[in-house]
Image 1: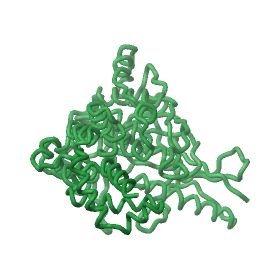
Image 2: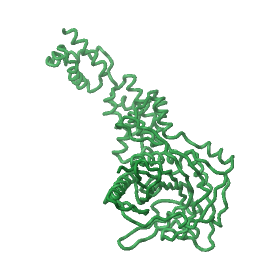
Image 3: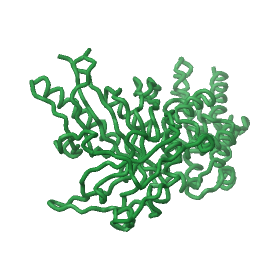
Image 4: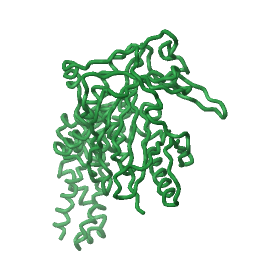
Length: 484
């Protein structure tokens, strides 16, 4: 029997705000344990929550990015359960009136090769609701310590419909969602810091069957690649179990990335097990038209829309856009350089192939770079006008720009690197190279055009790279033709 896989994802995104969702205590990562707490976070008797307006506003913004329906009224509920990371023994969340209903996310599936844009499709969403994050358990052998610094951080849970069918689709969805959250200035989505976390629901069913199979939830997948690996394993586990005549149980399983296996944690709860009821300490929130219009004015160009614009306006290849698009700051850097130089493709190539390479080797970020868009534009301009060759730019100018922040024209002047475009100066050098290398000359005369590259190399060496390569090629051919 052949089986179809059905996957639904629940993605938790920490909303970046200055303070927690129901108190003025600050948020942060890497602070001393249990220093970002107060009576509200710890659930002390008499401590009352007060809603963080910025968390609500950014959640409305997420809804608009996801093309969700934003209801006029949204409210808060208590999700009751006992676990050490929840100090109140309930979590303030949303049940029947979430802040975002429905929605969709555009994704790109891998193409037949890395150089070709893949197939685009839309992933339908069920909802996105706003809640408070819980604390973090740190396990040491048989002991566990709880850190409540994360508890109370604004958290958006974004839930897909069960419409994904492969680990690659899940991987593409998570990358697309992450890019949307970064573009919208909602979150940095650093999974290592817990700013984005994903639980996956997986089931299998015989091909052709409409009814969903038994759902298994996988937790503790701490990277986007980890989600893809966890799904691949769990899919095979379920199919092998079914084919062997075994039963698949509705359960929650953990993911062990080191062993590359999932393991049983507990049997899956249903919503009624949490005894949801409206939170008596928090009033519902009305999202009026004026508020919506203000938020709508902050919606940025979406990542795939920007990528399509780069194809159409700049004729950039997929290999370049796939590097630029995930980073809005890098995109802004590129667009400024392209505007100043008038050469979008060349500017993009220098940024993607050279600048990012140097930053990576040095362990730096774009914010640390001494190279600005003006540097890139001037360098591209010098090459375009024939003042320097690409080889000179790469080997003798870019490193100086990167290390010292000097402008390209100043480096060319200081080092005497200006390219020679004088035919009169080149002819004696080219003639000398031709006379010294009768073998390659004979090959060229015999029809092997590629042999001229050896002669060009000798000329460039003799001129210490200052000769214009195109002009060298032209002069060599003319002199060889005269030689007969």
